[in-house]
Figure 1 (cartoon, rainbow, N blue to C red):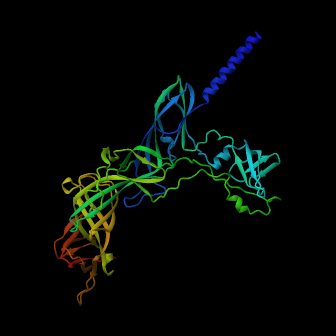
Figure 2 (figure 1 turned 180 degrees about the horizontal axis):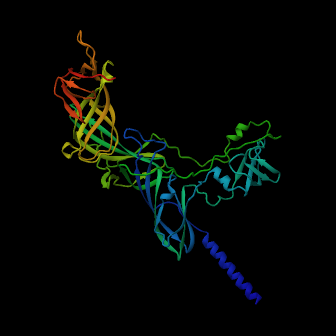
Figure 3 (figure 1 turned 90 degrees about the vertical axis):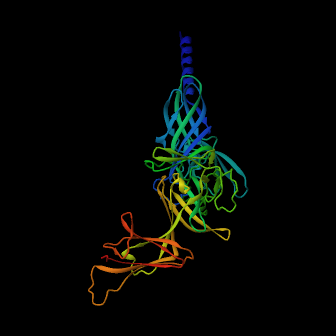
Length: 525
């Protein structure tokens, strides 16, 4: 019976070992086969505010498709190359034949600090170089403390702090500890009844993305027509690149609570030395600035660099300041928001910006209006510059007729065959049928002045005063000017229009003209 029991025990042990081996199966998916990136703007960023180039403050919905061979039994599947800003609680994994057992966002990337921390208590090789002779000596060592504080190692000679002997030291690791990845990784545990090749879809939200529309407007010489072109600028602050991604941008406010991603790196290594007979004459600062091992090469990218995608550019109109393109984003309605789909795959590179054509309207009917305001606090302050507005109706008949996402606008005119920038403004999200009004800032050549007129002799002072509002133009052409009234008990000597419930003075000024509005109003106290 004893030999049989031994055989049964050996068989059971082999089965247990096989089951353990099966439980330890690790399947790595290095990259997605297809990826879809939908970028949402930062809901707290105003239309005129620029993108945070180094740290974009919006987010993205990323959907990846991966083909994975899954063995029978329990397996850990490691999805490498996910976004570093992945929000763990948003992850959805579908396509696994028998579902999920567990999912984890691997919190630590491979770095000198994490490599040292995960190797605490393990045997490594210490490579020490003599400064005098250049001779390299290797010895076995055991790491006793991690990256936080002095790095203490144990050798046959005893305990010592790394780099405190006065000799250059390098730690050589035989292998990378389990769980460290050179790229952001999401891991899941699954259980399969039989081997299977599955198409798995991985979807998640990630912070560190943003987008905006950048408009280029070109006014005709008489200010009645405008050519409008827009770039869709995509920004990624993530360290992961998504090549050949189907890309969309969403305009409109989505109810989303900002969530910060997990930390993905250990603290940097700090080397500290203390008084020792062999290090008393060595400056401590030199050791504190010396890294444990050279970091992996970093691809330097200029944050100002913008990749322009527009392979179908046609220079049919060389006099235009806006490129003429047939490639542009396709606008779709998605509930209460607008979706702008880029018609061909683009690469969302790590820590970069990319621009694609968003829209072009070559002939928009507009009106240029100069505006001021009649408010008591402006009285006696001298001439004030009026502001230039370009207005239009968002209708097809006026050359528009499409939803316009918020963004910055640069206004140009042509002078002697060259573009001249005359102002910058911004627009908010604009629906079809709404009024487009772009404020391009103050224009010094058109001034306004509010003056209180002196009281007639012998009249007692009272709450109502006499005022005049004067507007002057240095333009060689006729202009339209309007001023909104913000004073109480206002009484003018001429009939005024109204806008938003307030009186509105509107006047046409001839070339180099002046206009005056006289009125009575209550003084402000």
